[in-house]
Image (cartoon, rainbow, N blue to C red; front, top):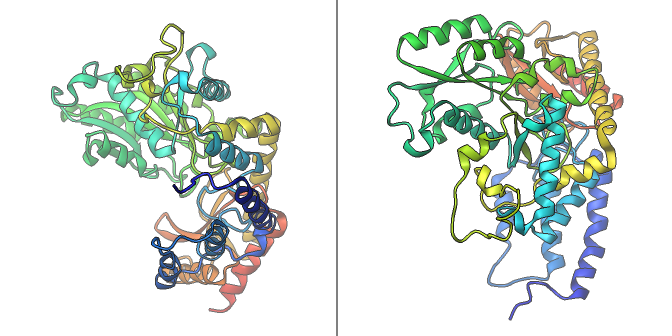
Length: 472
């Protein structure tokens, strides 16, 4: 019989080979191309060399994988990756994933992994308090990502607003339930509407103002108009740091509107929510504590491996009310204890120990460590703005968060010019940036997502941009 364990000697030899390779990548990521080689046929040929009828030695197999990953992925841990909210993972969080994979705790039932379950409960409570929720009211759950957390919010809001929803679904309702969000909100809200059975047309998109935030006046007028037309408003989504421009909604105004119309108020703070961890940036998300619940992605500004998110609420019963179910086959070891089985207040059933990579990081770096990282990335964002402006680029978005959308001052009306600059940067392999439209103007978007990004990296990006521009 094949030994899935391998032998102790094989395991030891594998670690001796693999660890230096991983260390070399981790230490020298900045020396690699940022961008991937995009050759589908070449990539498929490399993959199809694996012949499953003829197994190979584990060291050869691993070597093939690491060599391919060096060439055929965008290196998001690179300090000159200025893309989406993909971080360089801190090293304790990498170790945490290795520990999790080895122990493989099953977090469906509390009694199977009591330590893991209580670690996650502790983290939810601590981060809930940082948001501003009262300790006694806090509940939450770790999710695979912000999309799942936002789906959780929609389901909780439905169950909170329509008492029979859990059993009867949407059929007894005498109107279409309506969700309200900004035109700049993440598209996972539309997906949440589809997955929950509401449908795309239940999402009422409110125009953003000149800063990219939801317009409260238009929101309130739309709610009143929708009510007169037979809609049933039930949920407002706010955003702390939109994906494109980093805009932050006015949470105090949104909370007032939600209270006035008895609507559930959720904030998608997947990226910008981490501002609560630094005293200088916390005022940027004023009013976040007034939300009924918050999406908070761990794998973004908290610099841990993909993927991890938290859904945190100030309503201690709402998750159980929305997801609780009983079965005969689930373990009953802890039924006499005052605990909550994770599967009973979550979309997920069987799942891994998501929270360990945050817990280990928090134990090593603490609140102060994360506060310093946030301050550094904000500083690099400000440096990028000033360096771009000094070199004839014009910043098109308005946010204190470290994401900058910009265009050439003399060619901002020419989307083809902006696209060519972006393509040239990507082909060079020197950095990764993207395109985003702001106010009908095509801009280059650069976001500081890496705690290793330095002043040198910022100036190198601007130099690369200037060089690309000079060649047109």
